Image (cartoon, rainbow, N blue to C red; front, side):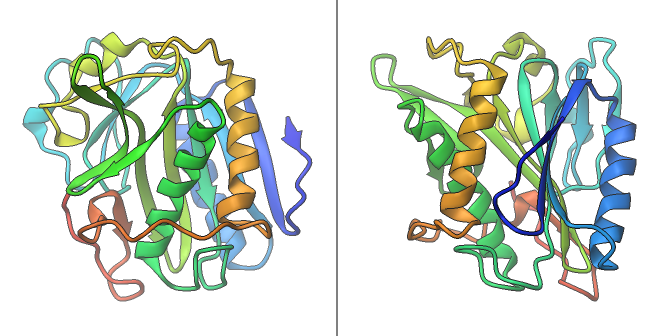
Length: 253
């Protein structure tokens, strides 16, 4: 199912059903190649996967505690271990980063990662959820003032090949949070994960898609709002880039 795109040259697509991870990798790489060649428009691809674990370029083998019989994949993106499964909206973002996109200037990988963070924060705003960034911790976090704790609600892991981005972000709408126990998510053991439903919000996947679509315009589109202050640290632990083109990002998460 394709959503109408109000941004010229950008295609939005919502994939029906649960998409096998190898099929997603192959399709993303093919699309990125086509974008680079000028043969296809940029794309934001919204998918769900069956239960699985993926390892980024800085994943530690010991952080896979128990695969639970789920398949595991080397993703080639930046970052460490993550879980994907039903009830989680994964957004794969394929952009030509040699040109500007709203608040993100051309050829600026740090600002691109910050743009993805801001996009998720603005989407969560639509549900009156305050998403926050943390120095030294990739992803988007929410606080529980009553319990004095915080948990990750969205993850980021990207790859940039010859200035075209692929992979992207994931937002926990209503996944089985117990499945995250099979890994140390993003290498961070001292904090947990949460979802919109765990916060008491009966948000549907379609609701999440509408929020992401609207927030996109405020970060990457013509209706871009002023970006937030830069995060402390470079935030490169989620980024894998080809050596000799964009440079090789650090492996911090």
